[in-house]
Amino acid sequence: MVRSYDFGEADRIVVLLSREEGLVRAVAKGVRRAKSRFGSRLQPFVELDVQLYPGRNLSLITQADTVSYFASGLIDDPRRFTAACTVLEAAESLSQAHEDPALYDLSVKAIVQIAQDPDPIVALDGYFLQAMELAGWAPSLFDCAQCSARGPHHAFHPAAGGAVCVHCRPPGSSEVDPETLHLLWLLAHGHSPSQVLTPQRGAQGHQLLKSYLQYHLERRLKSLQVLDEV
Ligand SMILES: [Zn+2]
Image (tube, rainbow, N blue to C red):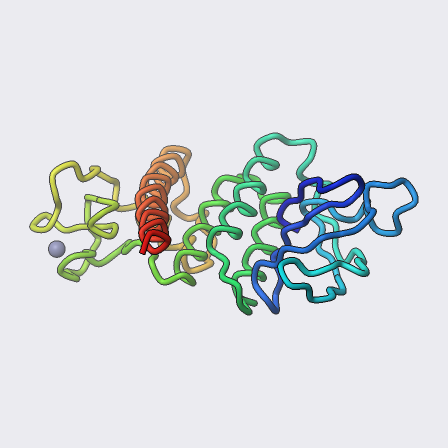
């Protein structure tokens, strides 16, 4: 489950990331009453098996059973908890209203890793890279994003598409340690980053990803707003 909000006197609207139908909005009736059969299960970081009755705007949840509970490794650690919330937010904004088992499985795996991994931020960065790969707009991390010249390169620019060579680098590109890009490449391909991971590279990689995500998410949100205006 991604998030929920109260509705009416005793109902709750929940936003679910599902394997079969992407993002689903549904109403759970009466679940804020003490005797509700499944109200307590409708929490973030719980994997549920739900039965939905389709409605005109919202589906109705008629049954919810817990499959896995991931919150125990997260709630006592603010860094892990925040990182896991970020996964849910990203999954919500990347998910479309159709079947997306790969994004679902990736999001569940990331939450488990964030609860267990020695460095939850590295696990979060791996999630972002793989989720962008699925969405089709991951940064280039080895070859030049503009001319495809073979890397490794020393510069990174979000609007240019990631790593850029000395000939293509636009003004304002970040100077980067090629091993930081190597670290991100390993994470993007689901490999262990331990051979190149240092605190400095981890922090630099996280900054690069943040700027890349910010730029591309804003651009995507703007294009959605434009579509609304047409
Ligand atoms: Zn180039």
